Length: 242
Image 1 (cartoon, rainbow, N blue to C red):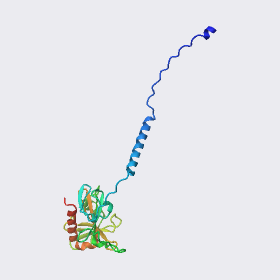
Image 2: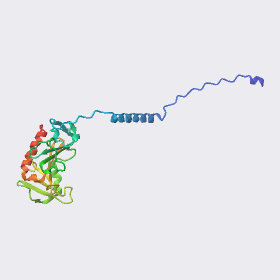
Image 3: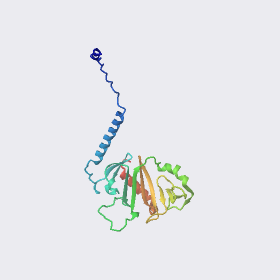
Image 4: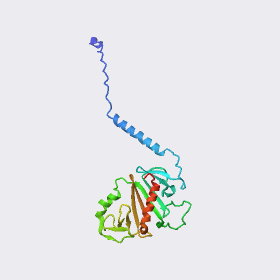
């Protein structure tokens, strides 16, 4: 028994360490870390202090403005919203011109306190991306006839025809006013009731991918030829390339 007690124990073979494969949590952790870094960079970009843009003076020269790839030259005083009063690309620009001079409102003339502006001496214009909107001539042929009444209404002036839109249609309360001999030259949708006037007319033009909507009082239809000529002159000034 003593002999057995003093026998040296058998040397244990060293166990080889197994190389563990990639942890299943590694990929989610990397994705989470990437998202966290991107979020931190975005927050830093948003909160990073910037120098404010210098506002454009109302009496500055015309600004080069691009809407839907179409280039326009617009006087700053004609741009109604100060946030739009900058050169470059816009989704939409809102303008106003005095009628019949077609001059921008004088920034030095301040309206009297409490005195409302006369809506009948101004031509309002919206320039915006046309997108999927059909051109006016195509709407005249494919869309408007579905909603028009069969009978014509009394024309506002000689040389014009008018067709009322039926009740229950998207254009209820409006009528289509157009030149008898050349509807494509003068074609407007006019409401039959307005605020401080007898209604408002919308006349549209398309320049490239941009839609221009001219808004004026219905009373101007008595001189619709002068309105058409004035809009053509203003359009050539805004878009000389055309």
